[in-house]
Structures are given as C-alpha cells and as structure tokens.
Length: 446
Image (cartoon, rainbow, N blue to C red; front, side):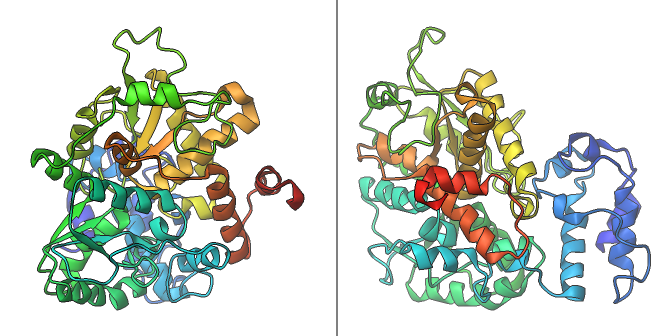
C-alpha cells in the first residue's frame, strides 16, 4: 500500500506518537509531511515543509507507541529522501558517504591509521563486517569483536572497513546513492568467499544486510547475524567460555582516579565497584543500553541480555527493554544539533544511575561514542560528581570476560577526533565546547 494512503486509512491523529517523541510536540506535522511527500517535483509546490526534519533521531519510539505501527519516522524518512532528490545531498549527508570528499572516516584516516584486521580477504564460513566506524573511529568495537571470536575458536575472515561500506547511514539521512552503488558489490564479495554467516557489529550495517539489501538486491546466500545474536549462538553451543568473575575483576582494576578497565578515562567520577553497600549480592550491576536502530527497528532485545546474564559476577538492572531511551546519536541529529544530542546522551547516564548501575554497556558504536561524550560533558558542565558512568561495548565486555586483556582505548581521543572531523568536514558545525575539548585532549591546542 502507498505510504500516504496507509496514513490516510489508518492514522487517527491520536497523538500517542508525539507523547513519546523526544523531538517534536505537535501531531499536526503528520498531515504536513504527507502533503509534502505528495507535492510535485519542486519543494515549493503543495504545502510547505513546516517542520525541521533534521530533528528526528529515527529512534522509532513513535512507531512502537502507535497502535497501527505507523508513528512519524516513516514520514520523516520519506521526506528526507524527497528533499535530497530535489536539492541534492547536503554536507551532512556526505559525512559517511564513501564517495564524498567530506567523509569523516576518510578525514580521521588522515590522522590515524584505520584498523587492519588479520584474516582480511580469505575464504571462510564466517565473515565479519566491521563497517566504517569500528575500523576508523570507534576502533575498540572492531578489535574487541575479533578478540572474542578468537577466544571462542571461530574460524572467520574480515571484510576491510576501509574497502567496504554498507551505505546504510547515508540512506537513513536521505541519501540512498551509496547503498544502491555498494550493496550488490558487498553481497558478491561475501558469496565469493563461500561464507555461510555474516556478522556485523554496527546496527546500521546489520539493517542494510538484513532488511534493505533483500529488498533491492539478489543472491544473499548467507545468514545475517548481529554480534549479540552470534554470541548467543556460541553460548548455546558451549563455545563462549567465560573465565572471569567480572565484579571481582572490575573492582580490582579500578584506578585511584576513577578510571576503569581498558579506559584511559575521560574524568568519570564513578569508579566501578567502589561502593557495593547497596548491592548485597556483590555483583557488577549492568545497564544495557538498547540501541534504537537495533531494537525498535529490528527487534533484537533478548540475545544481548541473555549473553550478559550468563557472565559470572554480573547482573542486569534492566532485564527487559521497558523504559529504554534514545542515546541521541542517530538520525543525523548529532551533526546538526550537537548540544541537543549530547544532552540526550547525558540523560542515559541519569537513567542508569537511577537504577543503581555500575556501568553502561552498549551494542552500537554510535551509542557508545555519544554516551561517553554525554557523561564527559555532564561532568565538565555540572561538576565531577555529575560525570557519567563507565561505558563499554558489548563485545569489549565479553572479550574481557573470556579472559582477554582489555582492548586499548582512549575515550577523550575518541571524542576529540570525532568532533574535529565534523568541524573540518562541515562548513557550519556549531559546537561551542569544542575548543575546551581540544584543550583537554592536548593543552598545546589552546
């Protein structure tokens, strides 16, 4: 059924989508967006676009709240695609476009060498697709994933995150060209390796292979699994063997400055395991952050929780996704409205703290980066006692639990380089704390 007809037939304008939306406050945007999508070839024809479609996180909370499975996001996505066709791709839409000169990963690659994984290019039953972010920016995710696979004895190969991009993030911003150009090439490469299983860490990559590619391309002769799904399978097969009590390990590894395992610290005022008086079980209390694009969009809630619940010395404070909130990173909001995005990430820390959590674990590189920054900026703005909790990637935590040494990481460097790349790749990147952030990272940059 045509999208507009679907809304005409089923949307009752009840406002439940707006009640849960973190960005918009009026249901009147639904008919406005419908009119815009139906208008002619010029943006000025028909009813003008009255609402800023860049504000949408594409978090899908509206879709989940809607009794007809509609919400606002579907109209936002269609409006973004139409606007791109009329005006061409914006600077923001080129940030993760491998064909664009202002690609942030290319820019970071000029300053830091991307990860070169072992086993790139060879034939294997299992192939790991790290994607751009885990190879070029949030490297701890890609490195930790292969360490966990090694610990489980998996025979795998890796598709270079420099040579292969899924195109999903650009598509989500309204620029579908990269996905259309790259999709079949990615599929053909995996088939050429004879692979039966494809693993992704990034929810965007997972969405591309699981949902978008089957709609557009042919010959997906392999199973697509997100990291958490594959870890759950390894656990069921008895191949994921945990060797550490993580509560004891994090207690013994917490530094005097509040830093934690594997982290160079960004000034967290909350060291793991520093006070267990309120937790008689003596377990590491984990808040699992549900990535919007993995959960509400694709339905993966249980597998990561099942894996984390099996780790010795750990317990989940949120065993169900009820009450989960958006980290603020998605939908291009982080680039167009950085303060709004980072403030939303700080809210994740406050929610996790309200549940007496010790650490936050994410399953998305974007969530991880933004939540780290949200906690850091909260401490800078409101005092160290308001700094965020330590933040870890799922694969990073699992790798440590399997007995590996923690993957080297530098949170402040991650925050600095991501902001620096945005500032250099966008003509108008307005993020006031950047200069102070640069000085924190390197005093010589003052």
